Each structure stands twice: as C-alpha cells, then as structure tokens.
Image (cartoon, rainbow, N blue to C red; front, side, top):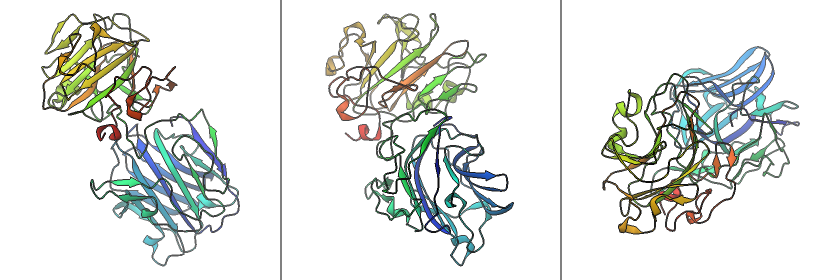
Length: 446
C-alpha cells in the first residue's frame, strides 16, 4: 500500500465491547514500524495494530491516557512470500483478562507475548467507538503499511472463530482462505478488499471506505494464488525493494554485481515472466536464472561479486552486449537491451530449455514451444535442479528492474495491452507461449 491508506467514520456500534477483525496480509518491507489498523483521536485515546520495527506484532489501546491493551508477540513475522491470516477477538465481557483480547494466526491462537497487558472488564474497543475515524494502512498520520491486504472483515458485536475465515487444507496442511464467510456484521461491520482493490463494503452495511494518499493498485496476488516476488531476505546490503518487492534497485555507492532472486523456484513445468528495465545505456547488468546451489552460496547474494551467469548452474542475458552467459563465459545470442525495454523469459523445465525475448520478439529466432529441440541457441540448463528467476544490476545508483510475474504491472503502471494465454493465470504485456504459465502457487500446481 506504500503511502496509501483507507478511512471510514463509524456510527453508534451494535456493541462496543465485542468485535471480530479478520484480514489477510502479505509483507513487503521488513524491519520498519508499520500501521495496519489504527484509531487516533488524540494523544491519549488511540488503538493500533502494528508491525513493529523488529517484525513482531503489537496491539495497543489507550483510553484517556490509560493503557488498556499492550500485547507484543515474541514471534516475528518475516515471511514475504506468503499470506498471513490474522483474526483478532475483542470481548471485554469475558471474565479472564487473557480471554478479552485474543490473536489467531493462520487458525492458531498466539499465546506467547513479551508484553501482555489486557483490558479491564467492559472496556470499550476504540476501533469501534461511535464517530471515530477508522484507518487502515497507517497510524499516527504516518508509519505506512508496506505490503498487500486482502479480505478485510470487521464484525461489530459478535465473536467469530478463525474457522469462519479459513480452514486447514487436508492435503497440504496449510491454512486456506474462505472467501465468502457467513457472518452478521452489525452496524459498523464491513467487508472490503474482497477479490480485488474495491473499498466498497460487501457486508451489506454500506460502510464504504475512502482512499487517501494515492490509489490502490489491483494485484493478481491474493491468498488463493500467491505470486512470486523478489526476495528481500537475500540481497546485498544497500539495495532496495519497492512495489511489493517486484522492483529491485541499486543505490549510489553500491555498484556491485550481486544477484537478486525470486521467492518461488521452478523444478518442473513451463513458466514465463517479464521485466522492464531502468538501466544506463552501457549497463552490463544481467537477467536470467540461478539454481538452488548457486543462491545457497552467500557470496553470490551478499558478497563482493557473483552475478547471474557467473556459475555453471546460472544462466544470464547481458544488457550491454546481448550475449548469453554461463560459468562466467559468454557467447553471441541476441540484441542488447537498455532503459525502457521489456524483456521476456521462458523456462521449460520439462525439456531443460531457457529462452529470452525483447519487446515481443524471441531472440535468435527462438521458439519456446519447440520442446526438446531448443531452437534459437536456447540455453540447455542442468536438469534435476530448482531454478529461481534472478537478475544482477551493476550501476552507479538508481538503476532497476521491474518484474511482472503475472500481476499485470511494471512497478505501479499497468501493462499497456495485455497478451494472451498463461492458462488463465496472470496478466502480461506480451503473448505467453502456449503451455507456459505464471510463477505462482496456482501455476506450480497446474
């Protein structure tokens, strides 16, 4: 959401002592204080659900200068590749203090807190007070949430179990979303960001929200289908990630050639993705793939040098020359590429072939649908490994790659004219080769 936030002014609640809040969240930026939900009347009256600078969760409420709630988890939340489902119960009518505020993560109650202050009996929930402004995506006028939110349900006056909003998959054991929960929402209840970026209330209560600070970008990434992003946990110090970790960028003074790699890997099947460049004309940056063995070597991600194509299980396409490269040896391949070009990558792990394209044309007359033939001097990659989309940026600062793994955006700009195919999974600028799909949990299971 970056600097975007949502607001709504409440009416007289059905029950200010009892409420359920459920939402799905995917993190992007780590190690920074970020507000997810807040109510800030003044310095002495406030509520906040916060991702802390140490990646814990804090739930805080203050009334007339008295702290009613102060819960800080021992657990940290640093997974940027998955969606979390949080369910918060507030019920100050309960006898035991620890039952008055309960937090569930992916269906399991969180019970380990470094700080645990619970409200007194019959204390009002400030997020559901009459006439206050509910905020989503920031707190205290700043501290913006950086990530994705989906399927936000707020129920005024009733406690619903976590199983109302999700269930455990009998095969995978993972917590999966219930996209249409059955609930009586109450006067201030709402259901927004259902299957998209709409802030129009779907609960029937007409408690619509207003977008502030910018616009909400729609993304194909959702709790039912998690798309790859670039991984902020593996990178050289000083490089930055933006736009939900789909943009990687250098900073001046950090002109080194480490690899950025994706959160999801590929060991079988056929996958397609795109990148848009913001590169200097003479950049020797590279795009491509690297195997699990390559990225497990810290020197390739955080050391002084380890670009894409530097190892025998890493395969790159070089910006300045258009050459292809592996094991630090390059050969003639295609056209060079520079600022504004859109690159296409097709990885066929059923036939162990890798193809690169530029602005709608596959290089060296390659055909990603040619199977084991591997036309156009396609790379033949080592079989039996898991590969990750990767890039290396060598520049003086401000150079970037904008990845489209199927969300339909380069940074925050939608593709100009969506192509076809992708097996109904993802939106791309150019036509996706027949049989290929987006790198997402749905794509991995097609």
